[in-house]
Image (tube, rainbow, N blue to C red; front, side, top):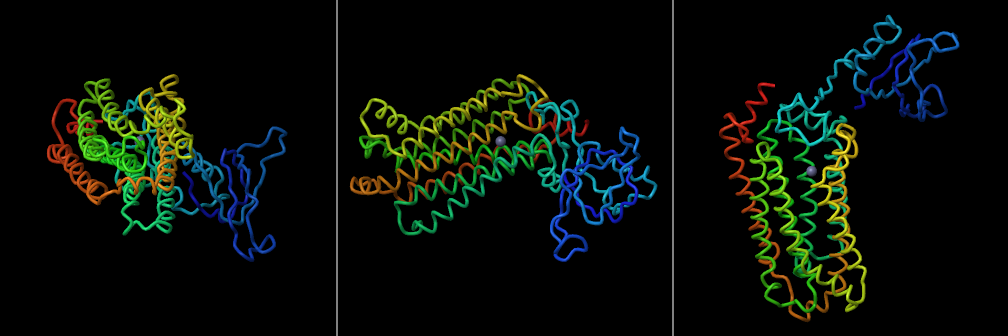
Length: 433
Ligand SMILES: [Zn+2]
């Protein structure tokens, strides 16, 4: 967490703090330095004790605003510096009153918030919405989870807007599968990022946030099915039974996926293994179904019956990352090997997010390449997308999936406090902590 404060005048600084000072823009025409510019703050460190040569304390003088990066316990040490400096160090009075949300260890939060092998860095289980937003700028065990899906949202949005300027999504029905796919690859990381941000408002909000996360992932699988069904389907399968029923089956898969993954949360505390298995299965089934046409094309190529294309190599990279994503989701590595060492950086869920996003990037490239290169052939063979098979399927699935989320969320919203380990009961447990 960084805080900006103006160090108004530092006369004698007796500090030995491990505070790093970062340069700040002093503005055009600042008193020292030609034309203002950046202060010389890089790498400077305030020291509290006299140095080892007994030369006495250094006396740095700052006549410009500085950024202080306070680590855990840093606020208390800064307060101590101000007291021991006896007025030599003056800080804006409100600076030390800014309260960073406190973080907790695993045994301090209710079971429903605990993550496998993550020992520290938990946010308060009853955070306000504002605390949740602010916590995304404070290092805790969810911060990287939030950003690894928030930033890619903007990347996919940018790719979407670039496509909007080159393709005619409004009237060219051939582009509608790509339109649906692009919308969904923007929505799923954004929903995930929001779920990770607001999941500590209460036990109920945690479950509801992840219901939406699962719903968005489930709809993303529909986006894959629609784009694969129209652009990636092998030549020999076009107009087959599977081709004609690919999207309706995928709509059914989203209902299965959302229902099962939401249900799995109700088993999490009592039967964690079963819950994990159900949730993994819920996402693997639509993925395997969506990818059947792609597997077939890859197999054909491996058998030498096709010429490798850019699209196919992108699809292969996507498959590689998809398997890595699945492995990271189930294996809980590396934190399982060293619990507590990867609480903030490098735990499996962060790697899972990154792998999923990189995989989606390659998938998007593959879909776009197939769409561009196969247009003439697909149109000639009557495989034009319909409104109902693309945007219609998305709208129907969206309504049905929101209904499922509503059904699972209703008991959490209406009966927030009961006994036992069901998710909707854990608010009692939370209040006791
Ligand atoms: Zn996540």
